[in-house]
Length: 260
Image 1 (spheres, one colour):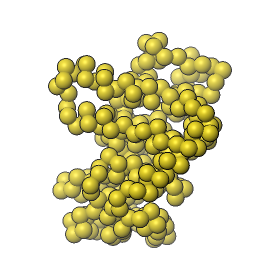
Image 2 (cartoon, helix red, strand yellow):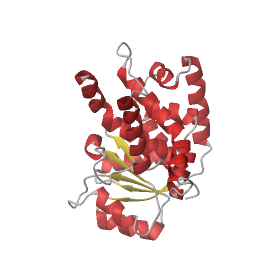
Image 3 (cartoon, helix red, strand yellow):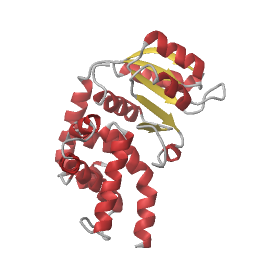
């Protein structure tokens, strides 16, 4: 049991990252993690010690996600917050789950097949369909907040190649807030530490006071922002990152914030 607890603890920050990206909401995503762990504690679910732990944990998250709409509705008697219900009702398809698992969580197709309970060949088809869906997504106006010029240019290039428009690149909080007010972007990509000693989190918080816009944080230390103990980012990309990871995360953020 001690080894299992240790194994779960190692995976927990990344399970939170995945669940938040899956649902597009920190609170709902963290709730799925609690539900998954409670299913283990209550004996409703079990871990096979002879199989790899990681895919089994992600399968538990999917089981909690699939059960969430019915469970939430029953518990609330129809009075639960409408925004939470809407998030639960917009849970991504198997195609998007496969794409998030391969891109955001860096799983192999064999691991994804294990998580989804499908043959590897079917996973390949799911990924093809997901990428087609991503390519059909409406373009967004994107604000980049990054104080390292080379990284900022790299991010901007990835964003443009994905079909989106970069409306500005900010290196400081004050610049980011001003650019957001001027251009009203549909998406914000933010580094954590900025040139003036402020943080991308502070910049995003001020921007969100006047704009309802998804924010993706790009950081070398994602586990520090995935504790579940306070208000934390919904969408996180780890540095260094593969371009597809950023593109897929952008697509997922826009999926939960359409028409921006």
